[in-house]
Structure formats: C-alpha cells, structure tokens
Length: 239
Image (cartoon, helix red, strand yellow):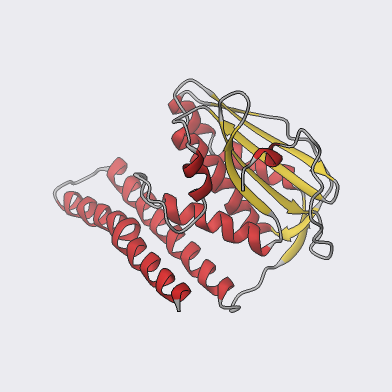
C-alpha cells in the first residue's frame, strides 16, 4: 500500500512539474509563432521541447511497465564503447557552446549483451546530465573498463558540489531538480540498470569531482555480483 501511494505521489509530482512546465513552454511558443511570419529558431525550440516531453513520457511509461511486468528487455549483442562514443559525439555541439570538453578512456572492448535502446538512453541521460551541471570551460571524463564479468562506466565532471545526501538520493523518487525532467531521467537510469542486474550510484572522487558510476553484466545469462578491485570508484560509495 505504501509503495502504491509513493508511486501515485511521484506520478502526480512529475505531471505537475516536469511535463506541465514543458508543455506550457510549447503552448507559449505556439502563441508567439502566431504573431511571426517566419521564425526558424522558435520553431526549432518548440520541436525540441516537444521531443523532450515525449522522451519523458516514454521514460515514465517504460519504468511503470517494467515494474508491472508488462515490458521486458530486448537483449542483443553490441559494443558499449560504441554507444558511449556515439553519445559523446551527439553532444559535441552543445558541449562546444558551453566550452566543455568531453574526454575519456573508451577502449573497443568485447560485446555486451543487453537492451541496446535502453542502454543508449541510459548513457545519454548520464552524460548529458553531467554536461548540464558541469562548470564552463571544464572537462567531463568518461571512462569505461571491464571488471570480471561486468563493464563499469564512470562519468566525472566538475560542477556544483554534491553532498552525501545528494549522492544517496540522486536516483530515488524523492529529489526535485531545478532542471525540468531531471528527476524522471535519473530515476529512469536507476530502473534501467536495475532490470539489467547492474548497480548505479553518484559520488565524489578523490579529485573533488562529481561522478556518476554504473555497472552492467556482460551477459544477462551470467548476472554476477562484481568483485571490485581495491581502486574501483564504486567501492568508495557509502551505503
């Protein structure tokens, strides 16, 4: 009963804040468009806002369908390194405008067996979130490495300092963000990693940079609890 109440409250809050604000922006844009003969920039902004709203609705539906057992993962083999590189490439224009460099150690590792579409959205959400919160003229470090039967991805950026409570609640239904849709995106990341049998967290590393970290099993047939090396960033997270 408590879980149902929490889900209902989260759904209402999401509709009231994230989806409502985004939809209002579209309506106001259309009102302005009525008074303009040609405005390609305005049309482009409205299209982006519509796409953003659609993405949030899709993420919400996916989360609840996974929880209710109405939707399952579509497993296929692909290279996680290529997905991450593609995400970084797609964000290059935005990062250039902000003066942020996206760099890292992304090697051409073996194939992972997972839901490609879901993992692509996962990587894009985390890297774009780092880009949104990163200070101007800084560098986002994206590192991928193989640890036993898992892949570990670390996305580090220099931005607003995260507290221990921020890190603990980052991927829960509780926190609210000033950026519209951020709560939905981060919770989607948590659900996507969970259904794959992986782990996700936020923390600060030794260089005083914020970091998103997640692991994915190489194969869904072998969901092995990772035995991290001593220097693994995930090992530093306090439960």
